[in-house]
Length: 98
Picture (cartoon, rainbow, N blue to C red):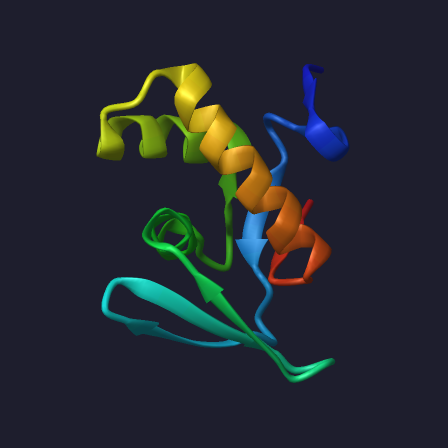
């Protein structure tokens, strides 16, 4: 299995943390983590990823492919955008990696 940063496999399932309160504002995502009541402002690319996620989630590979298509990026460029977002989102308990 090919691993990427922070040991997240490309086939890992990424889903929204159901405990997160969130709203879209001007194309950006505002999420509140209830454990620490922190407000997180997430850019349009992060919001695009968030909108892809459902209770069943998406694989990292699917997310990278969708970001590449949406923004006209190469695989390497999309990976460079997606991986840091997923790392931070997982660290902040905004998404669940399974």
